[in-house]
Length: 638
Ligand code: MSP
Image (cartoon, rainbow, N blue to C red; front, side, top):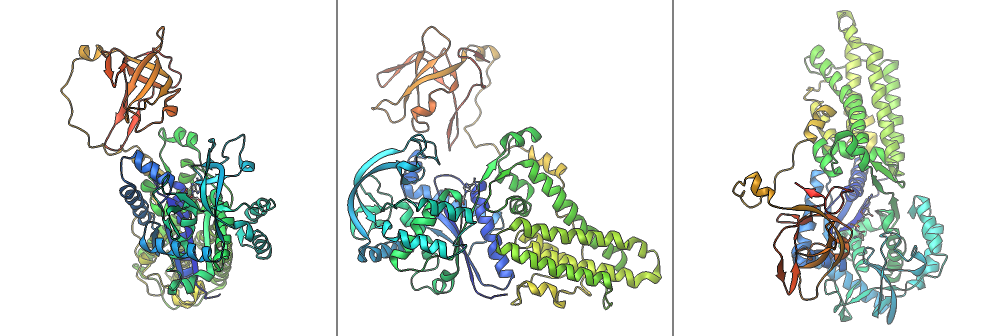
């Protein structure tokens, strides 16, 4: 075992959307790795955070009616607050709007510029807002961005460029001569395939006139830094580059963790940027696949679709962590479904692990007054169990190191089930009936607790709260030893004399969870209720299904959209809707909505409106009330 330090990073997440399963997964993996390496005797630093500059953020802030600063503070806060709820403990949570980061980015720009690696030029290209980058002609699929399936905009302007092409040969060589630099190998191959064509230089600025929300270039304040050039550098700021102790210690062992969506910036921009600045490149770029949401399946079984993070709140952080780590093969896509989660919870957690713990501790309470028996020689079955533990640790360590978390956990569960078989094979309840066999009974029980302590350590990186609670109930506490994982094979964890308590079941069964699942969401604090109306009064409203056939935004109004709505009448009507701050006209086209059809005609901004489109309105959002799928225009709603 080596005692070299360990540095792990997640992508810093864009604050234009609230955190979801994908963000949670990568951050859980990073947390698991940091804990695993600590447990195995290394000092680990784990960095995550938020990416807060750029077009997308500006736009999202404007949509939310907030200044960029207010907006990024709010969403970044949501990410930061989510991590402890998932038992995730980063060493540092970094934000690209922090002063330290701004300075680091500017310093690196200066260095790269001083080396003649930056020039000013004119460029026209296809810009994808979603990717926040210019997409090459050859990357487009049928003229659309392959990632976001939208047509990029053609943008031509004067900008600063990084001579990325200078580093192409070096990068190809570096990838080829450093196995695992990008892994799994299929992603290294993907990058190498891309590098077969000549690399273009990278546009690294945006004019302030178009985008004021960014880090000013140190050598031209008419420009801000391109968001990817800014964001990638967070991995250095996080360690207080250039003089930080953390930088000296952890940068040489840097592991980045990303999903395949951002392979290009991490596999090409980042190493070439580092190379140009004269900074050593990272050790490994670890690329995982995508979680695919099996919504149809989820709704079938439980009647209502629940978002993964809501399920996490219901089932508990540790069960959720276990599920995502056990279910996904790192590097490949995996599908998320409530059934699969419940099946792991009931099978692996409640049945295998939960039962082993409950049965063992119950027997010690019953037969030994809760105290683990002392001083007994081990027999061949115990030697076999110890060998099995050593083998499990070996497999676990190897597979964790290779990012095969599902295999590491599988090995632990084989050990768990071996302990379950050890119970069945030795029938302690039979031994307990014969006082002469008490020494045998004691030996079996002590060995089971020994085994459970090892299991608690091995599950701890993935299920920290569970691991710690198991140890507590077994009368001990987690020790992070310099020996690393070998510690759990030593007699230091021999439980003789420990006071054990069974406690409540660790993982509640699905029945309980399903009921909870139907609980209602807390109501939105809205205005006070209105006076009651008679059914006759309500019936005076003529509510109809309408199809929005066209929609435009008049220049003179910020709030209004002019919709042409088919209500099954001879001609479609013009209806004005105050939705412009919440919807693009394009998004409204083709929607079937609910319309108050007999509202008296009204003029607004010189335009006539004949009816009203209904929407739900709370303090955070306005959402169209959609008619049922397939409902024809003109259908009555009552
Ligand atoms: N801000 C950039 C990253 C800059 S890093 C210097 C960004 N942010 S993001 O919010 O879009 O996050 C992308 C990352 O979120 C993915 O690389 C992955 O880690 C995670 N995921 C988002 N959706 C995902 C899935 N559906 N499945 C798995 N992980 C995914 O890109």
